[in-house]
Length: 446
Image 1 (cartoon, helix red, strand yellow):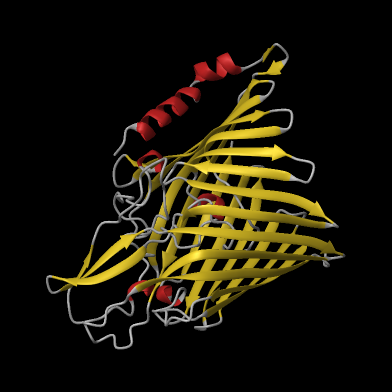
Image 2 (cartoon, helix red, strand yellow):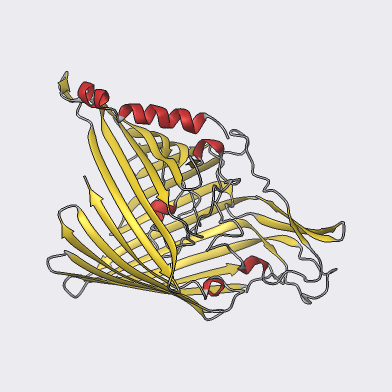
């Protein structure tokens, strides 16, 4: 593993030292030199079928402050102690994540991660964020369409909050303030992709392998991750505008699809799977507007090249191996939010994806998901109850999430949650049909 993450963490930990705080307090030439510090400690435990499934104690330290009147910095470091569990066993190799962004494992139970480290520089008509960061596009609940700039950590499937599951990347993020709106320009030399659970993990993805030809051993070759910071960098742009009462964005991203394509072939009397990554262009737009107690939202994304396997007509025929073919893909989300009842928020979404090529792919040409989010606050917002339901219409599989968050005291909260999966093993949510869980989490702020 590269020593770069260790060097960055060492520098960040140096900033955390008492000496750094002492030198940083006060004002110099009218600039506040105080370093703001926020420490959040989470203790979490979940159970699956009366067996301890997942446990962790996590400490997240955020430091921020002004370096001069136009430059500030932010650093976020997270350390976790993971109990004996199957959600993230051992010390994963993280082959799809670039060395400069990988988590560091002290042993099988302790991990360290530099979540973010960046400078913000303000100019007369522009701003620049330089360093490791998250870039968020889109506002969809539960599922993503435009939010494809950063890859995602799937070790707990999609159960973690997006802010926690995104993999921050080293990025040059320039925003120009124009008369027509704000233009964001991105250059991302960090070649990290989605981090998928290993085969022995609790939330290992098994649905993609459900229809593989049977009757011969399967060899999974190492992931071929692009690693040239110049040739393999992602670039993107987003124009944000306010038009006739609508918040509108126009988006473009030239990037690698963060999910690997499984190229399959027979070699030495076994089925060889070779994961690789392919380029695509994502062209998109979003719009939202308020109409009384309702907010209408929409997102649109067109991917020029989505690589999918063809459907296997006879899974028992070992000579009938999937072929990978590129197709255009059009996706959209229509969302309607309602706030007509005090302390209550209700949101419904339609999420559809259309494959534009007529080939016989291993998924339906039109894929539809419906979501419902209900959130209500009680006791002067000290108690929050939330329900999120994601229903995959094509295969009748779904995920139901229920949670309650209660503020026990200032900066101390307790969360109870339950996650229920249902469906066939070959489908997105159905593959975890036996992985329903309940859990509790305590959060302490300092």
